[in-house]
Length: 219
Image: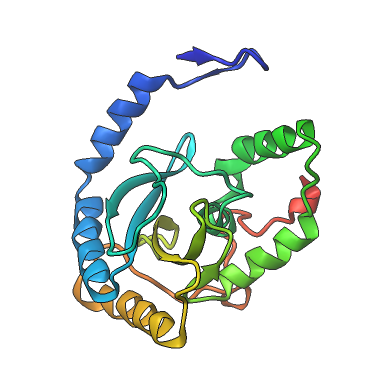
């Protein structure tokens, strides 16, 4: 365990994170998704990331390097913020709110300390857009780039992981977007392991996942 100097709260330490990452890599569905990542990378040339939910947030558990150069990359085991990363917002859109409440409140608190005001109404609009999108496109990636994200759901209908395609700024053209869309949407039939699937989710489909749609303005 480690203790925060700022709040005094305890959290999992580096050794716990290392053991958790090792366990995730041995989890069969994740192994199957890793195989699909290579197929998407080969079809698009883009860097492809796989994120799953852990106690510290959306965590990178697998990555396939693309053909494009980036000045820096996200390391395996790194956790993304929920509000200030595109992939984080995908998790926020579909995760049961009870699972991410603590991290959400902490991120809001840290932003307030830094004098950064979170526009809750704008975030709610974006979360609705994410839920209504088969593939979510954003320029708010942690790495300076455009990102395309596709959520995958387990047999219970809950978010299992998110596949993110990283595209350098300046090369997102119609043919590039079409290649990513085709690679993402054709992969489930041939590559995703049993028990995981991509489904078109939107508020009208009855999505709630235990109050996953609860208004952020009520937080």
